[in-house]
Length: 162
Image (cartoon, rainbow, N blue to C red; front, side, top):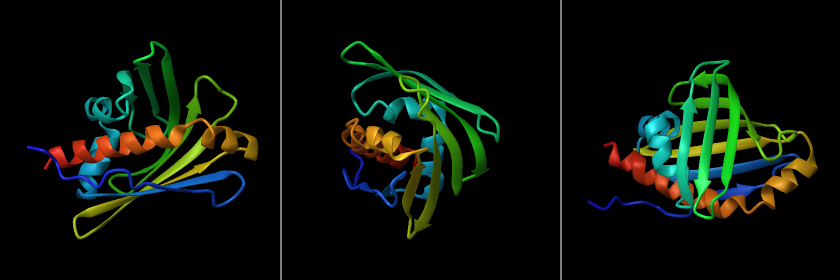
């Protein structure tokens, strides 16, 4: 069965000189989107954005718990991120830090909110960087193409859970 998805519709905006806001609708209930977002076995199915294999997806889903994802790209290099959960409201909100291990001084704070209307979920991610240089490095890294592909896969995974 092929899942019906709404590919490539994440909207990226820059609300301030230190913030990135990403908003994406998913054709799945929020508890399934949240589950796909927070379950290691499911993260391995979407976080790669079809650019390699997720070799590590560690999630200690509690305030103070640590997460870490590692991607071995098709080009043969590793990309790793980690962070700490600061606030968790199951199915509604996650606040955590995020560190790209290739630029450890650039820690950001991500606030993800999950809202649902008529069986569709809107995920809003507000990325708060420490300064404009870090925000601009993030935005200019080419992150949007990978993020769009990852979000498409996330939607497919969430729909597959129904």
